[in-house]
Length: 170
Image (cartoon, rainbow, N blue to C red; front, side):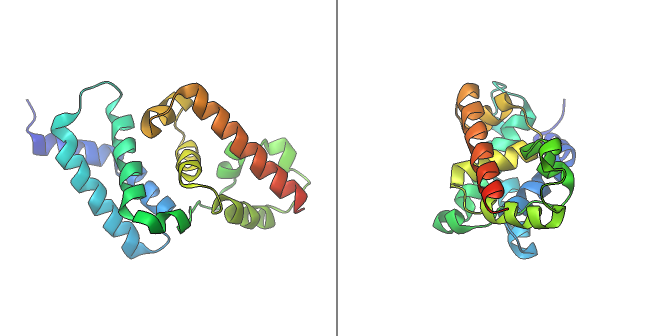
């Protein structure tokens, strides 16, 4: 039987890359990312004994990480930037690749997408960051605390708004 410390170390090792990416999504500078990462670790440690197994442990960790990211920055979070990397896979998740081809140069589209993502509400930023992380609609619902159909509607609405703004600004 694993001790709490061993279980915690295993969970963090298994989820470290995801946690680092979440920190990058919510903080643009390295110091802020490190501080947020430490805060997430503290909250996971404090909550570890309370895990009831109602969702997967990874979904539970995402929930703690996202909630920590939102509360960590307090009211300034509303104005924080959602940072995504420039690889095309992030854009392919949000838009059909065939729609992108030939419309805009990738770099200009990325810059505009970044601007538009940073104008989203707190919840919409959280939804998009989890979608970019590759979570299913059900997992996103579990992390955010809303139903899967509600997640689908919100994601569809966000994608439509982003697409409309990017096409209009073309």
